[in-house]
Image (tube, rainbow, N blue to C red; front, side, top):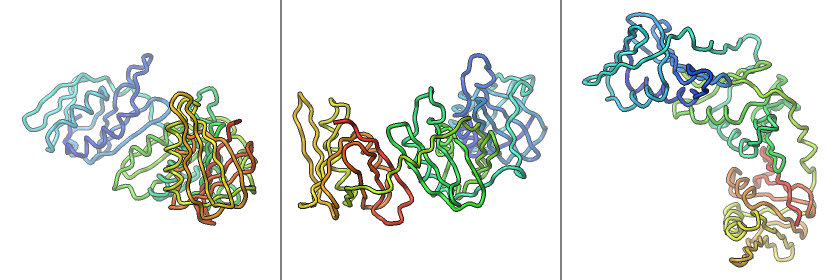
Length: 367
């Protein structure tokens, strides 16, 4: 193999795929990145057997071929080279890299041992095209409530599914739940994408990516972001029937400025660290005030108040302040609707608009 690439394009490709490379002891080749010519392009790819990431780079190919190279070494080496043409030449499982006054030989492994990259059939798969902005918003708003508990795998992902002609994303860790409407759809979908895969896609998005193509089959999901492609296994299992947990109506509904709610929550959480983040929220309809009370036995206590636009009925509920902070951080708009019924029913947060397409549910603590 012999070819030329630009330092900028090669660096971008290596940094995109190298995060997927893993150091699984039983398969040392998974620590490597695959370099393989493809007509007048260079394929740069890595896999950990769960996720595969590949990137094509325009190249001047002198001789076809392939090799695998340690991911960390080549990524860091190339990123430190000057922004000039890089010459790559393979000789006997060694990759010779020259760029300006820099020259290096890296020991590689034959590409024959590299796992076959997953392929998804475009003709038989379900396809969606989503704007980058909508994708980033939907994933960020739902991934925050996914679980990290590996004993319940279905909760460690985000559930992409169709319902009554709309495509939704949902995630829950058993203590909170989020649901986001993404786009209208005529196809039926039910798929759980690992949160770690979605995190990798978010990291790969750059300013040049305007839309993302998604392909789903029974076991895999494929993302195409311009020259970068990421393929991941789906999580096998049935996601909980979460819609029954979302209250249709609530006794107490509060609408207030998001900035005010964020401020009093953050202040209250400072005093709630010793009590597992527990804060008590009280709504008083007569004075239209929402207050948050927290106690730290050794430090003291705090009550913070905010003025509300609307409070339908007095009510009190105890929540985890971290969950509340995280919910407020991903809500859109400058107003928040916060509703609950008594001390034990789920609390629902949406933005202040009537057409809110994102719901965030938090289960209360027993006070």
